[in-house]
Amino acid sequence: MKAARSFLAVPGASVKMAGKALASEADGVFLDLEDAVAPDRKAEAREGVVEAFCGMEWGGKARMFRMNAMDTPYFYRDVIEVVEGAEESVDAILVPKVRCGGDLYALDILLAAIEKSIGVEVGKVRLEAQIESAEGLESIREISCATSRLTALHFGPGDYAASVGMPQTSIGVEDEWDEVYPGHRFQYVMHRIVVAARSAGLRAFDGPVADYGDEEGLRRSSRIARSLGFDGKWCIHPAQIEVVNEVFSPTEREVEWARKVVEAYEAASEAGSGAITVDGQMVDAASIRMAEGSLEKARAAGLL
Image 1: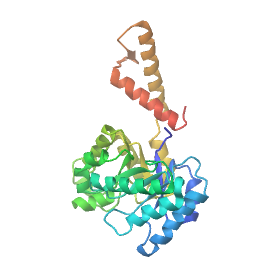
Image 2: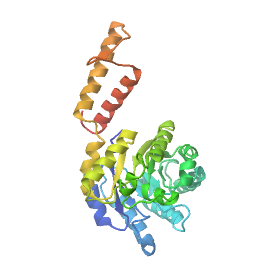
Image 3: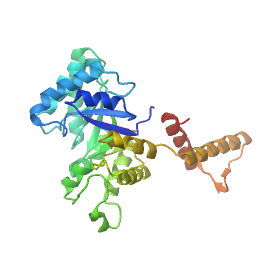
């Protein structure tokens, strides 16, 4: 699977910005019809998304857009107009503020009808779900298994904080409130998302850092997300891509260790030995799986 470390968000109403985003080093790009588009520009933005999907070279990047939430009057037209307009060009839809498995089930039914009507394979359009509320987090197991279209879960830190009444002065980074709480305030929700994703065979992505000029904060936020098991992170500005790609790629040291572990395992297997030691440390089956995972990520990122 191709690496998906960085996701760059682009306003759906700006075809020009979409072109620049596709030329960037971001692993993924999504065109946003939700927060980035004012209510009176939704229809125009849908047309822009169709134009970008059909008229631009995406260079292997999935053609994905973020629809409006299911509790708005905009979502159904987002789905119908973009998928019917772009036809086979739509690869995935990012679904914000998912509350329960029923949200994704309803979209699955709607998409199947559209796919049949335009003559594309049913199930072609994938779904990726944002967990952004207390309700969504409580239903996360149901959400993660709601449809075979689902391929990833995304964390929305800003809306989640608002949902639970958590004070926050800057989205995506630690602030003065983190000095009060003895630990990382989002550790629970972030790890729960990763666990739900992995148990369902999905990928997991962390949300954005709002202050795109705060490189140190972005790096720390990215390292925390990677340490919890996330595959990648959102970017809201091209200046954030390099740091995110770097943090979510295996380091040279990780790759070297992984190679040693795999080579030692293969040698022990050939010799019929069950005991494996690397650099003076005993290596078990879990170590081998982690090493293989690191090498797989390095290959996906083009490092091997």
